[in-house]
Image 1 (spheres, rainbow, N blue to C red):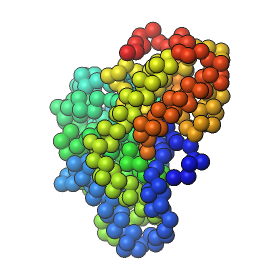
Image 2 (tube, rainbow, N blue to C red):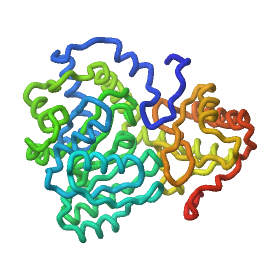
Image 3 (cartoon, helix red, strand yellow):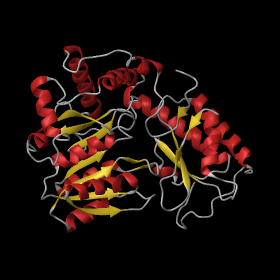
Image 4 (cartoon, helix red, strand yellow):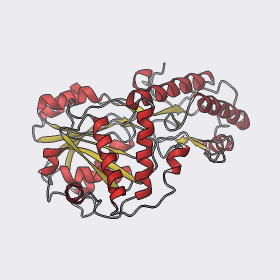
Length: 383
């Protein structure tokens, strides 16, 4: 790795290994058998991780993760269908915006920025609205770092006979999920998250029968997940120009994911990163937005200290000067910033970013421990 590059403590793109980068130093023809073999290998591996080899298919889609989410919603949700969207942050709200753009009707359970939607709430809304055909939820809402209770939401859907679609963009690969056992009609994720690849494509793992029944339903030519799948089944190729170098990097990343112990190994490292980060930040006086029960191992939101000396842009620049990039906040309830735990980060990097944050506080003239925030919601309680 070029040590001039800062470490990315973000929810993706993230810091990748030198070997993942090196995998992109070759060129492939988009119709070439070797490249098509890489695509097929990636899809087989993803289905195995998701527990869907016998029931689901994997369909990659060019573009960012949002492209894959829109492709999935636009393909699987019929124009006359009613959807329940579970929201507790920016990405749940984005799902609502996608459905608005597609002209698909939906009902929302909006829990604000820091509470999870619970299974009993979902069951109550499903019982009151029998026309709902599917529920859509974000697995890990990275605007706050909250980890939503997928299992109890899935159970509510199962009992009501409704389909479940999971946006697992920043969770799949580090948090266990079995699409056949939940059950889950579709799970969507991206190359540049917990598998530690680079940006360029997303993918949907979809119930085979549901996808087969969705022909002609999509609003878009290029985002038609059914047509992408049908073409790949027939030819082994992507319909339109594929991100060849990104696929090669992702295949290498998946091999490294497996070598680390798969989902269990990745989750163990990310959890250790989070615990080390949160403990160190709390020693500096920073408060987490969320109580410990809902802290994900993906990214953690910290409340900004209450001081006129704190300016996020100066704070960010000071930390970047020490070799680390963090994320601004994305909340409506309080000023905050976010620090990611995923990517090629280990104890050494976590300790170093805590030191960098302490140094940034000193540069801004903030006392340590930092002043507690005064603008957090009254019912926000931290451990």
